[in-house]
Length: 518
Image 1: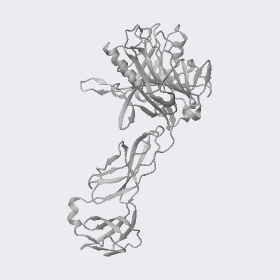
Image 2: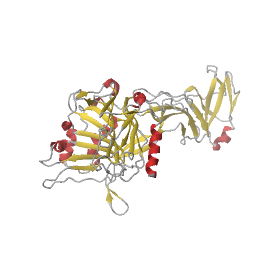
Image 3: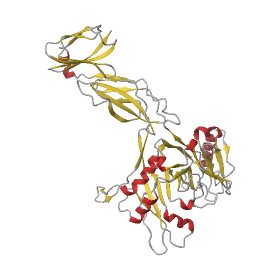
């Protein structure tokens, strides 16, 4: 009893935050323009599983919902798929295609760009019971029919599922094909790398993961290809599956699931088109031919994307006799976006720290937490001695970076950009520069004197040896003046008032100094 009271307190405290509306029909249209809908085929069960949503949040959170699931039949088969959907839907016997301008569907695979992303954040409460069986999944519905036609289930031969989280760890075992008389069903392969020695003399084939980097952390999915060979005499729904290739992305570590998904759909589709030929060793000809014929074809239409929960059991007594003892499943948001807008420019780039390990800091892009533009990484570009800027690092997830590759006697200049999860890149920030000087060259530096500093027009250089070249750089790293074999006085009257870096190259070394032009 104590556990039930505790669960109810969690549920009530969670729900009271919002003014929620309860779904009272199987299909509820939240936004006819974007075609955000909710489906709950469990609301009329012996013990209903109520689904709620917040109407005021639909415009920003899409098909978000919360459902309290009860296992009314007491069994362990799939009870239903309470979910939110984007794109096409069917209600009252009428099929409604997606509105492309609003939700990006229907769209053919060949026209889906990297800027089209799925955003999803599911959550679960009170799901730690031994009989709590559920999967949090995204299902992408592909169809070979005309653009605005209703998908025909029997003709949907390419399925893509993203399994975000489940109640238990998946075993990641290949399931062999059954070929005996009257036998058949589903069989599958997991994508793997070549065989390696596990250190104990055993040859194993490690899983080849599909990786998503989110806020600097890499999350991995196994990629599973499932096929079917139901025997003659099976019901028609099973026989229809014999032409199907079902591909599922399964979180490799269900205890370390990424906090949310915000990733291009194209990346998942592209992986399904190549992984079976690259990472399934010895895939039989029949299955490879089927994959070539069915998977990721350019003219297939994406007509709907659904996100929700496949539910099997709850934490009750498996007879559904306690209406208060359910599990809470929901999603904070579920929507698709087309992001073709570059992020805002990172501002206030500052250079600090030592000359041997200079540190760059900057303000976060103002788009870092927005709905339609999410920052994936920052990118640092560097120029050496006034040369062209080149990419120094593109895996920066905080507003700080230390360059540990600088060398003595060089002028370095930097700028930073922001890149979002659709690979749109901002314009460059302000540039900053430094010149390096090692402790070993301090004695040499003392032999060269530059005066006056600050200077008006004529700069004097005092040095006992031979000066080969004098270079002057602006703070952006661009060379503004170069003099070969100079005299001891240099006319810099043509330079604007500013701060410059002066580089003096001699037979004995290189001296760099800060120069102020009045």
